[in-house]
Length: 128
Image (tube, rainbow, N blue to C red):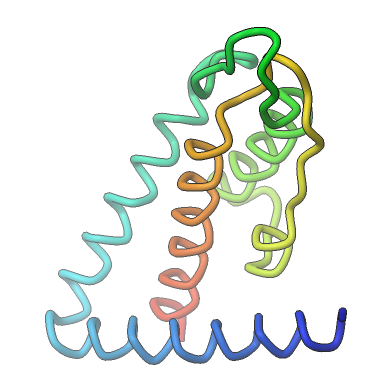
């Protein structure tokens, strides 16, 4: 299973890189970097929220993602954005959160993590 997952991740990275490279060529490097900066600002705004309040919470007794674990990855992302720590696409993609009563709403966290992966891919394109 892990070999198949790794192959699927690699394929997704290749397709995403090609698509982003095409987009960069079509709109130009400056516009691409501006769009990347917008994604970065969006993520920074979410991360700037107080711990425990970064995403909508599930109403008790419903379950959501562990607030502690999600806030922990948000701290890693903040360090990456500040340039003090490197976060790989794979690390962002394989982040797994335990289910907890009253945790963060999964759909919001999942959408946020998708944007994190997109930002990391955009940064890779910009740096190459």
